[in-house]
Amino acid sequence: MITQAFLRVESERLTTEAVYSEIVKAGDGFMYELKKGQVIRILDLAGNQAADTLLFDADFPEDHYSAIHTISAQQNIYITTGTVLRAESGTALATVVADTCGRHDTVGGSCSSQSNTVRYAHKKAYMHNCRDTFMLQLSKYKSSYAFSKRDLAPNINFFMNVPVTPDGGLTFADGVSAPGCYIELKAEKNIVILISNCPQLNNPCNAYNPTPIEVLIWNS
Image (cartoon, rainbow, N blue to C red; front, side, top):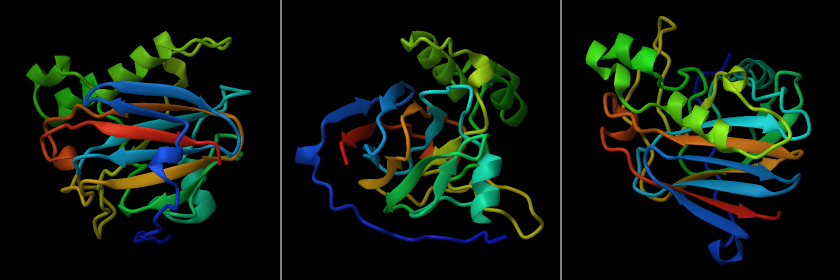
């Protein structure tokens, strides 16, 4: 399995032609339905921010993003331009069509009360975390499908640097993203995207300084 990859591709899309844009503050969340063919850009405004992300099939929400199917289908644990993000069924949900960062993790998972306690200290149990943000967004989202915690699965951490060590372990390393780096996803079918703009203060995934991201959407 390949463990190194970076295919830098810049986008030709103009921000002035985006049909939607929103600033997501550090620690806040974002949940939105993309129609097939639409493109979303996740923009790291200040650099070194981690954007924890999940995808769902909008027409069959039980079928959500699968890190395992994505990794096994492309034989690569890293995500960059050309990566097809797949669901539990194997269905293509979205394709990465531009990437100016080059390192995105889909193995480390999101921070939670439990992981903050285990990794850092018992007193960190009540610290704001991505799992709580995911849950809040799911509870507020208006849909005929009743999203709940059962819909949470291993996610993508855009802009987060989690290199694999020679002995097969993982490390949380300094980020390689810089201000203005972005990734773009093209929806291969109607999908719902859920983002937690990570509030993590205890590891270098966002340089101990969580910052806002911006999401922009184009119709093609």
